[in-house]
Image 1 (cartoon, rainbow, N blue to C red):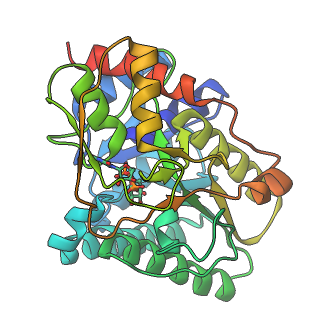
Image 2: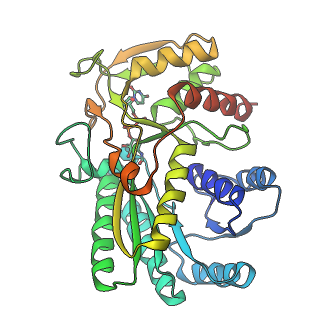
Length: 331
Ligand code: WQD
């Protein structure tokens, strides 16, 4: 509830008048994250500090939420570890947290009679892209323990939906979330040295890190550097809202890419950040990162067609909002 994506989801659900409750184990956020979210929502939130791997605590949280807000319509599951490189070092921890945690949650939903489930999947399930842009029918493939955990959960959800025609499940495949809430009150809290590009770029912009290491410039892309489909976190959560509204009217299993359909290179991201912040972002070309591919971006037409959803923020919005947040978080 207090992590990067979930906190933006809570803010949107609250803004739209929905009753929201949530849990978090603060593995990728802090109690201050909850406090900032409550400031943004201008209310105390129904929250319990819970690890999704703790079934008893999860049941307790669902009981409290039901008592306070009434029967729960849907569960949106954001709790998971997401660092590709780290997952290769501690795969068992990733499988326990991501897969066992999800099974715990699904078991509690069964016990509480909750049938609607929105799962945070990832474009990583496509592995080495069969084609670009990637559409939902593209081949899936595991290329690291993190991606494998997401793919295994997607496949478990297929079996669960097939066994219970009353289930309403959506798997949302995120491309590259960036940006922050326009208020500047909530954003990503990258602990330590960021794995992802844009949190790293902003650590350089604020002077916390000396330069960006560009992982390879010999890919077959527009300028040789990696191309990705960056999507504003506020667009990402509006896609979740569209998905849960669709689930309220449709039983079954659904899968959607959440991306913009546009790809930007590492050098383009650095150049746009310099233009918007007015700060020189030093960088050096280094070796490719193991497991990286050259170009990954979405065919987002299915979400447009079925959910009537498409990304609305542009690249400059993403960078400007993330800069607003980075400057505050650095203070
Ligand atoms: C983007 C581009 C790098 C850092 C990962 C996960 C994916 C999703 C998003 C969870 C690539 C280059 C990066 C740096 C660089 N997470 N880069 N220097 O790898 O596309 O996706 O995060 O769902 O599942 O796989 O994102 O931000 O790490 O990299 O040159 O210091 O930036 O090579 O081309 P990625 P990223």
